[in-house]
Length: 299
Image 1 (cartoon, one colour):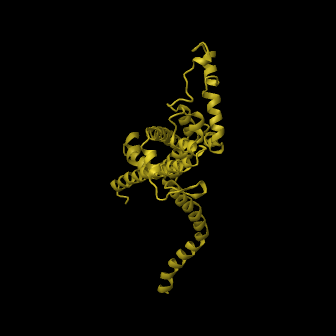
Image 2 (cartoon, one colour):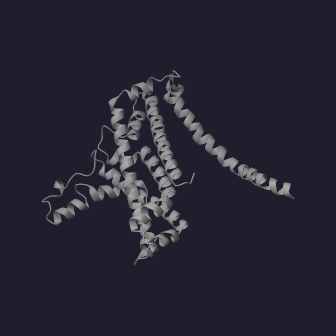
Image 3 (cartoon, rainbow, N blue to C red):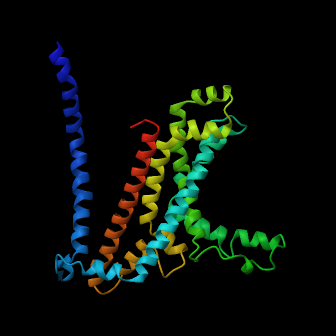
């Protein structure tokens, strides 16, 4: 009886692994194959374009030796980090509101999720309608007498300040991060916070010592997903950004759009660089999170 019971978890694990094998193979072939092919192309293996100099690190050398690449990297990191941080702060505030009782909470709990159902292209169009110099905000400012003409409204789009890009990212991603953080809060419950409040702890003490450690997993998982997406996003920086120097995804698109086929390998070097940089930053973020968890005795 004991031997049978001991073998049962092993059988269950094997069944689970076998059930996941088909989707695992598909993911391995699609993403693993694409990753290997991208790396090979960035190193000069693209015989269908007449390029077969593998292994050739010249494409990376030319790319990293160009100041335009480093400017593009700076803007990519700026848009990605700023949007993720602003969205995260808003998401934490919204998640904390959702565990409280207030009039209209049921309606609010549904309304804040609406951006999740709207494509990014629609969000970009809304940004142009709202934030453009002929948009609703500029016309409202002119109607209120703050400016004499809508054209005098501060330019928010097509600048390297990236207000439009960041606005679209924050508008679209804040509900996603809110859902993740709120789910962790609901699962953790409010018992510890209520006990701490009964014992005289202030709101700030409750947040930093109880609530923040509770929601840390939701913060890390949701912010990582949003940051990784922002690093590789193309549409918003292309339409709402300030132009040259572009973000890295737009720079890659320009290389791919070049009639010189040799630039295809250069564009793939940009794509691989995005993956390497984003992966390195994510690794550092997770390492810092593990240290934070260790400080609370969780690992």
